[in-house]
Image (spheres, rainbow, N blue to C red):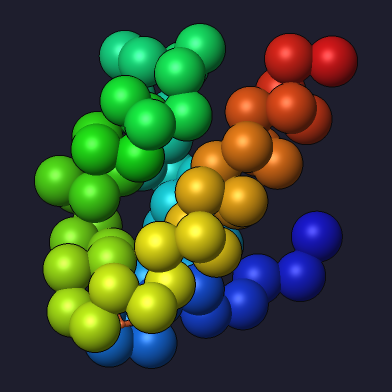
Length: 67
Ligand code: FES
């Protein structure tokens, strides 16, 4: 898996989101998990343009982990 930057404003990468997600207690709800990830990484607190990319990454990581 290649790492890449998801949030340019806050320099948050896919791996950062993955790490933060491990600490989330809402591993079954993308929006709740997003809030946890945001608290830890501060992703999507700048321009907000990465919001959907962050959600997509969370869904992808969750989907992979649940299989
Ligand atoms: S790219 Fe994430 S807040 Fe701007």
